[in-house]
Amino acid sequence: MMARRALIAAMLLAACAVTPARAERLVVSLSNHRVAVTSSFTGEDLVLFGTIEPDRPQTALRSAYDLVVTVTGPRQTLRTRRKDRVLGIWVNVDSREFVRVPSYLGVLSNRPVAAIANADMVRRMQLGLNNFLLPQRIGPDTADTVRDDPFRVAFVNLETQYGLYRESPTAVTFLTPTVFRVAIPMPANAPTGSYGIDVQLFTGGVPVARTNSALEVIKAGFEQFVADAARDHGLLYGLFASLMALLIGWFGSVVFRRD
Image (tube, rainbow, N blue to C red; front, side):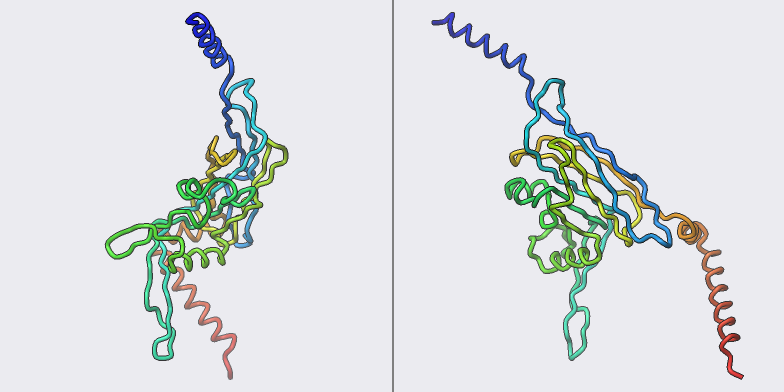
């Protein structure tokens, strides 16, 4: 009996030694890592291509995968104000400051994030606009509030209307079971700066692989020259702008002067 047990244990150890554990890795490539913003810029659609590969040779891949891509723009501190009618006039009666939140936030997936993983995991991994942390300054403290907080809802709705916050359950397309493409829209009002791209792979509601990429939105052409001049030579830029305003005003008075 002891010899039989020892033989079974040895066979199990040998099977574990020769059977590699399933593990995946992501290989991604972005169509354009630098977006140039000029006076004629009306937005751009970027494409992220990727493949799912075994982490080790001769490792079998699973059959069904889900993908969630989160794109975050430069961090900014923004303020949301609430208006109310006072004595017949609409005035700002309250405000809330959102501290270092993404200026651009895109959550892109192949199906709704609620169908990819359970509620606890989705909330813990900040998948989706409703679960992404948006810290607010409330008095002396800074914290994220519940998803149905009026200021949070209003802030997300406003950013969504501007095209800066978006959640799309159809932006990820699996061309084959292991090859995918992701459409990343950059609106015309996309803030300049560095953007992070977080790619997370799920199967059966469990995260199995993760990778990152990045892109940069920059001003180019005459807009970049003006921005650099205003930043690096503020005094000269101000004098030149004032002189131009005076000349344009004088020219207009001459052209439209009535005799």
